[in-house]
Image (tube, rainbow, N blue to C red):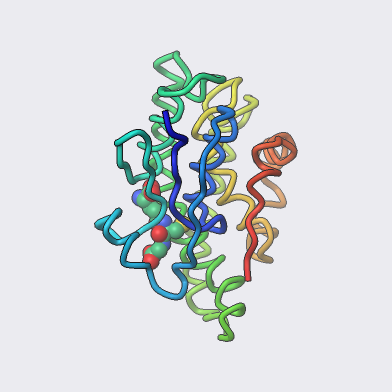
Length: 211
Ligand SMILES: N[C@@H](CCC(=O)N[C@@H](CS)C(=O)NCC(=O)O)C(=O)O
């Protein structure tokens, strides 16, 4: 069976989540990178009708949407389980996917991180109004995640799951912005979680290169 192929740049949070799943499972894979900041390549638009990254291919299966890719990688390959068996913890994992996709990514990455960190690398000034407007939602998301994490080692219980792999790239980027630093400084559960996950070899092996 051929190694899976993941299409998308290593600096993308969603690409990193899919890579983290592959790394945690110990799956050999090929990363086909391109820089969509200069326009989404036509080949990727052909793989992903919504013109996003990542896309994934394995043995005739073509997939897009990071939750689907993560679940497939967990279920199709040997290695440590990345989804809890317990229905309550599994529901918590799915809830966290939705919180991150529906409410967190937009303000935290799409607005705050892109304006504060990516826009200057493209030679433009951050739009302070866009950042300011994103902060109440970003703050609320971090409060909710901190509450959900309180009292347990990982987001969906006492073992690492795909929920943690979805948050890691978002947290990593947000924490390097001054706004993130300020919002996260009193989020004790999130900070403790981050100190635990940041040293994992999967996290070290997928450090993004920006700029
Ligand atoms: N729902 C998608 C979201 C993927 C997504 O938003 N990816 C971002 C990069 S992290 C992207 O492709 N952005 C390019 C664009 O919007 O033009 C998933 O779960 O994979």
